[in-house]
Image 1 (cartoon, helix red, strand yellow):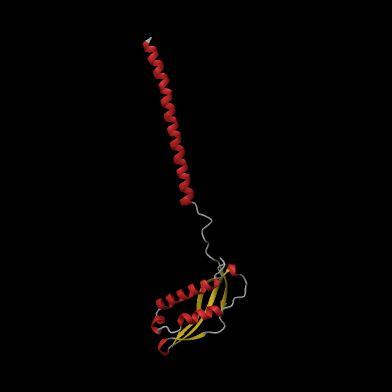
Image 2 (cartoon, rainbow, N blue to C red):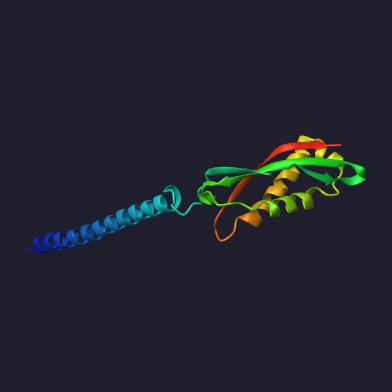
Length: 154
């Protein structure tokens, strides 16, 4: 009879161990599945909050080229246009501020800075930053680029 009691005790302990193991396995699967889903949503799925690149709209050209005094008696004849965004729509754009910023940017510069392509691109980028800062207000992007229509140094 002692053998029968030992077998019953062993049979009673076996389901307890297998239930614990089953719970551990289920918990591990749930945790791994939840971690995988979290990684997907955090790292792989594209968010709708990413800023979208502006779409090109109308181009607003200056009527006349500017003549700007450079250093050492040199001059710059500069004409440019503003690339507006689609968000700007058909609103009338006052280019006076852009003209003023261009005059301030180039006045007194050494002609050597403007003779190379790298120099022109650097100064053009700085001017674009100033114009974007002036025209892109209230979370509305109006200007997205500038184009030189004439650039003559003497």
